[in-house]
Length: 256
Image (cartoon, rainbow, N blue to C red):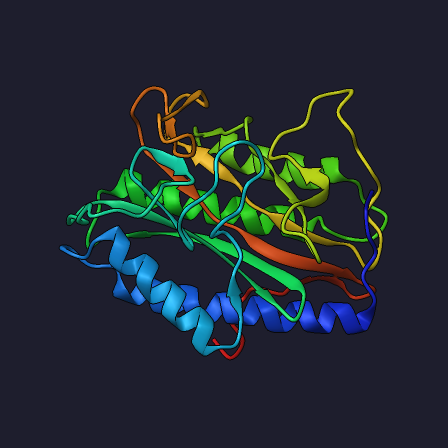
């Protein structure tokens, strides 16, 4: 069931997502050669509690496996759901930081991929195109449009650039639960659910873009999704609200 948020509820979601945006900014600034992904997770947890929120991902259990950390840190060929560990980042890595909080009963959720120092032009292009596909999708998140308008905008942007969208994962509705209806896929096929967008809907739009094949594998930890061909992957995400004035990006850091 798709829930419609009141203006007061969206105001709380705006606060939750601003906390996420501020913490992601701090995490991105902390990314450097030699830092471990576990250290980034600890920083995320400390900042979350300082801001009066709770981690959204730690203890999350959609199936049989509980997610053990606050932050998802996906390095290079890891697409999403990388579990923080003693792994040290190296110059030339790319790092997906996916983070969420619960604040006053509402969820915030956002992600970005950053480079650890200089990277080759093809890698810069992968990050740029993935971010551009997110904003192309957001531009279609208007009352009266359909989910397919978002999906096609993301897919077209990605495939025009010669990359592929991951089809095994999708964006989602967000609100009092982390994952609500509707699903927001990054591609569209005839016959897929295609609800019309309405004012008051809140969505997390999150393109996951592979350098090569869209195929993936899940590691034995039950969480980490990696590219089947070992090539790079990037991930960007914003939580947005559909308003009478168009899409509002709740998780974009204000005053930047």
